[in-house]
Length: 162
View 1: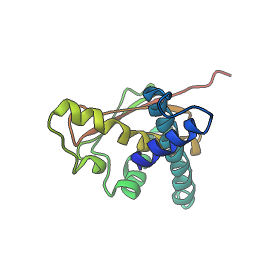
View 2: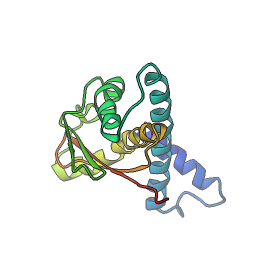
View 3: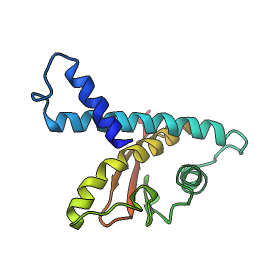
View 4: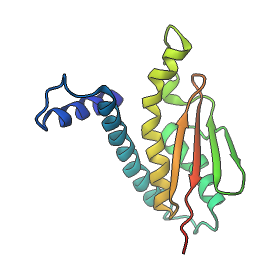
């Protein structure tokens, strides 16, 4: 999926009248990020709408995050999140020690592997954001990996001031 997003980002930037040599690599990377994130966002929305309709209404944010960690993650990656931490102030850290997209990934050096793995976190970040948005929570999601095949997703809920 990541190579497809890069190719689509390259095509969209070259169709605006510039040659591919003039396109900045960072701009192309950002376009691929936006594409993967938006695809994940739509997938997350659809999954929550489909699989939470038969469940009772969620009472609080922590219940929604637990649904995401147990049920949603199992649907998408065939396993539950390994660890959920929260500070009870709107910050949640989800840890997956054996993140499936990284299971068969290896490189000659660990730093190279981590750099190449980062784009594979964009889609799941979008899935998390879309799922939470569908449940009525505005949030930002930061994904990182420090050691393959693990991945960490930090969710910060955005409170609206009324």
